[in-house]
Structures are given as structure tokens and as C-alpha cells.
Image 1 (cartoon, rainbow, N blue to C red):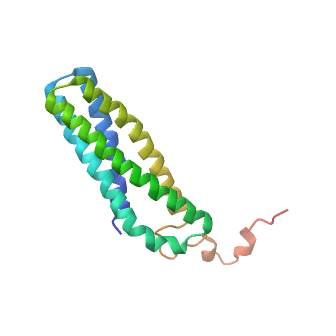
Image 2 (tube, rainbow, N blue to C red):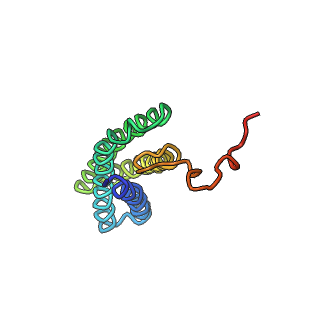
Image 3 (cartoon, one colour):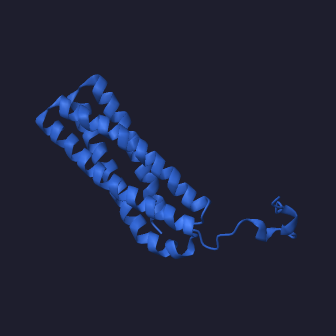
Length: 159
């Protein structure tokens, strides 16, 4: 399963691109414009790769989830697609601004990047919840009680 690995890149690369973008906003140097544009392109590719690998892994995980988990997975998939499209467009805007040497265009792309990066962080949180709360993509998912000698001692009684 490639999705966990690509998802980590899809979280880290937008953060790195945001840092380089902010540095560019303060320095306005041509070199930093080029570096931040290239890093943003890699971030977009990382988000697209995470969406693609997730769309490949999702059908295997879906039938094993509870109804609530299935609903969360569908929301996660939809947001992943929107983020993949958004990052592609943002990277294109930034590359055009860099090529045309238009600071305002690049600044708009960086502001959009900051918002999209926040959405990626939320997407990562949701992906973690799918894994750790619903067991998505986890072989032999259990509630942890099966390894205890007497699991009934640990189950809280509902009042």
C-alpha cells in the first residue's frame, strides 16, 4: 500500500513550499522565486500522488469499515480530489508568475498555497482518524482487547 508514504509527502511538501513562499515574499529575490516555484510544483505532485494512491487503496478499505467510517472515507476521498486539483492550479499560477516575473501573481499563489496547506493538514488529521479510529487500511484491526486475558474486566458498563 503506497498511500501512507505518499500521504506523508503530501503533508510535508506543502509546508516546505509555504516556508519557501513566505521567504520569497520577504526577499523578493529572483533565485527564491525560482526555488519556491519548483518546491511548489513538487508539493502539487505529492498531493496528486497521495490522491491517486488513496483512490487505489480506498476500495479495499471501504467494505471493512463501519457506516460512519465509510462516510468519513468518502469525505476524505472528495477532499483529496479537491486538494489535488487546487494544488495543480496553484502551482501553475506560481510558475506563470515566476516565468513572467510578476510578483503580484506569485503572491496570490502563495496566499492560496497557505490556505491549501491548512486544508492538507486537516486532511492528514482526517486520514489519521480513518486509520486509528476506524481501522482503514489496517490488517487485522482490533479494539486492543483481544490481547488481554480477561477483556471483560476492561469494558466499561453503560449506565
